[in-house]
Amino acid sequence: MKFDTRLFVLVLALGLVSLVLTGCSEDEPDSGRMIHIPEEVVVLASQDEAMTHFKEVMEERDIDLYRELVSPEFIFDGKDDVVYGYDGELSIMTKIFNELEGESGIVISNLVVNMLNPNGVWTETPEENEVFGQFAGSWCRQYDVGFSFYLQGQNLIFRSIGFAVFYMINSGTAEEPDFKLLGITDQTYGHKGVEGHTLTSIKELFN
Image (cartoon, rainbow, N blue to C red; front, side):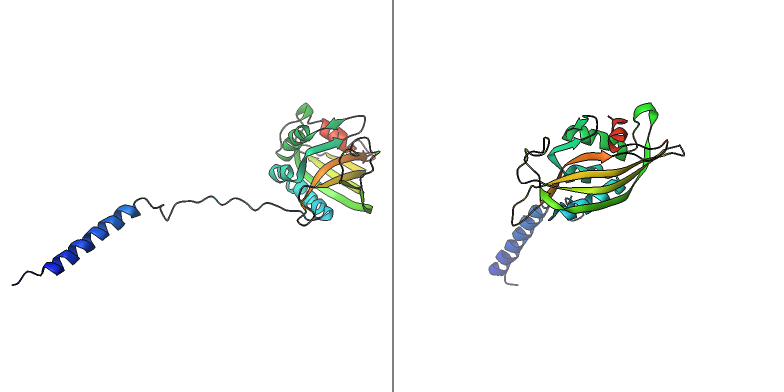
C-alpha cells in the first residue's frame, strides 16, 4: 500500500488543532458556575412615587431599601429639639425593622402604616425653613399620618397619629429624576390612651 503523505499531514494537523482547543476550553468558565446578578436599583421618578415606596418599605421593614430611599443628607426633625442625621436614623430604623431590643427590652414585632394622606400639593421648601431651607431644589408636603408599632410578647400597640411634613430632593437629573427622602418633620401627637406616642418618642426608645 502506498503511503499518502498529504493525508498524514492533514490528520496530524487536525490532531494538533483538537489539542489546542481542548487546552483552551480548560481556561473557560464552568457553564454551571453561579453568576451574581445585582438587584435592580429602584428609581423614583416623582415625589409621589417616593412616598408610595416609603409606605411599602416601612411595612416590609426592609432596611436595605430604606437606606436606598433616604438621602445621605437626611434629617429627622423631631419634637422637643430631637434631631437625627442619616447615621442616627438608620441606626434607629435598623433596630425597629430587625426586631432588636430598645429601651427596657422593647421589641417591635410589626409595623403598620394606617394612614398616609397628603394635604395640599408639593411645594418648594421655603428658604426661611430653619432646618430644610438650606437645601435648594427640595420639596415639601404635609401628610396626615398614622403608625401602629406592635410590641413583641405584649398585648400593646404604640400608636402615633397626627401630621408629618415630608421633604424630597431629586438626586437624579431633570430628564431622569430620582427622588430621595430628604427628611421628616414630626408633628404627631400620639393616640389618646396609655399606648399613645409621638413618632419622636417611639424612635427615642431605640436611640
